[in-house]
Amino acid sequence: MNSEKHKMQTILSQASSMNIMAEETDMSLTLETPVGKINGKVVKMDGKYVGEFLGIPYSKQPIGDRRFKFLEPLDEKLDHKVSPFLAHRKGNSAVQLQQGKFWDTKMPVGEDCIYLNIYTPLGSEPENFQKLSESKLPVLFHIHGGGFKIGSGSEPMYDLSFFAVRHDIVCVNINYRLDMLGFLSYPGVIEDNLGLKDQQVALKWTHENISAFGGDQDRVTIYGCSAVQSSVRDEMMSWTKPRMVRILGGASVHYHTLSPESSKYFARAFASSGTVNRLWSRFYRNDHYKKTLKALKMLGGPKNPTAEQVRDFFINLSVDKIKERQIQAKDFITQTKVDQSVSFIPVDEFEEEKLPSKSRMAQKPLLLGVASDEGTMFSDMIFPRKDITKPTWCRQIFSEFFGEKVFYQPLRELLDEISSIPNLPVFVYLFDYKCPTRHKDLFPEAEVPMHFGSFHSLDIPFLFNLAEKKSYLMDPCESDKRVNETCTTMLASFVKSDDLSQFPLVRYETTKKTVNKITADGLTPVGSDCLLPKRKALAFKTITASAMLLMAPNKY
Image 1 (tube, helix red, strand yellow):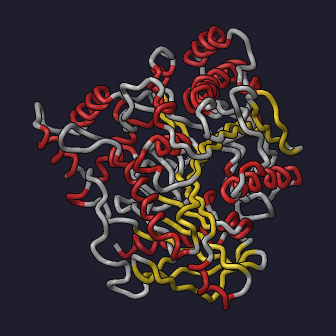
Image 2 (cartoon, helix red, strand yellow; image 1 turned 180 degrees about the vertical axis):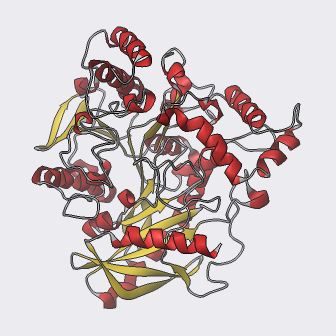
Image 3 (cartoon, rainbow, N blue to C red; image 1 turned 135 degrees about the horizontal axis):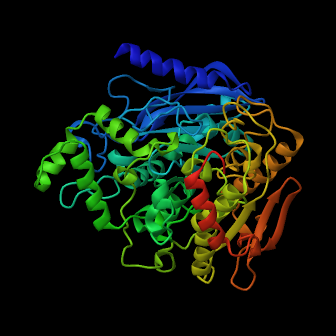
């Protein structure tokens, strides 16, 4: 146990020390909060200080008999044993598969994953640190992506110190339950969508406590960027079954805009590369029930079980057994034909509603974004090959079709739904920058080659101000820096502006469907035609391309 703890601390220390923009200091900062005294570390960046309060538990951990239950509030304050509570290291990320791919988390994982990290700008004068609670700065609340199966708010790419210190914004990252532990459910004994409810609990915790960290509880913006997990190749061929693609990050944000309970705790929302208005970002309740029974059989559970037996079996299942099931479910990445039907994503809470957004959407400003080459990376996930560095006609066609069906068409339909809602400011951007910079820890050429273009999630490091200067993640070129300036200023302005008439993006309206295009030359308002497919007869061409990719993926 001690060796595992030491290993975890070593990994996190290495991740922190790679940041060459930040200077470690011998200072720390203790804050009086509603949940007890919390001590965070202080780092210096470009002459200013940032307080990093890491690994704060926002509820009891869902372990033991609390597995598959709603999160329970902490009984005691965080400093009841040791005062102050030391928040110097990030907590565990959720249990998930770790295969060493660049998109897999390198963070330690465990069932005890209910933690958040807070990054607070402190200014340049240490003697003023204790006045923090008077600041009332705007807040960015970030929900990580990963297809409901992988990911972590503690990833180096989500280091929000860069953004916090540049823009005087308090930032929050969270971890929450994923896959089976977060989304398996069974009628009467295991509730639906526990992972999404975890996010909701973290959002409420932030509302109740962020003022102690200098944040304004009434000026919280939630942000998430999608990450997609797809079913196996055979299912991908059947586009008449629209529930085969699961989206997270941006879709999580969209979900919270539809939830009256969530919408009490934020003022604005920013969802990029993912929405829940299409059925393939949700899963029908009856299908989810069948999936649970299939997992029960695969893992050696009882035959013809009662509901209580189903619950008890999954509660007593070892984490190692859960990981074995995940390996079986996800080996599509390593070219093994698998049964993806035992991995878990949210149950559809709007099953009776074809267009839930129009009737449920919170009347709060909304920023939506998408990249210009969303589908490029997924053809190599769905049809793996040995060398992904060379583009082919088949993969280009499939990528365009995937991007259209999973990202652009849902976005267009969502905009058609909500652009006519009175008093709902909506802004849209298209990220169209093919970043020339590659780095082994962020954009390794062997995993995301240049021909992927402006691929899915590429905008994240530019939004989070990671390309302003040389850092442990990037050595940016001049065009990277210009795009960074456009993106990070856009996000900061959306979070901070009291008057959105001063926001640099042009509003999307029914009578004027404006999309704001981000390139190396800056921000340009264009028509919504940029969200339409680039090729004619794309569906017909995809049938041919997919058949060829199934037959000989290494050739085509």
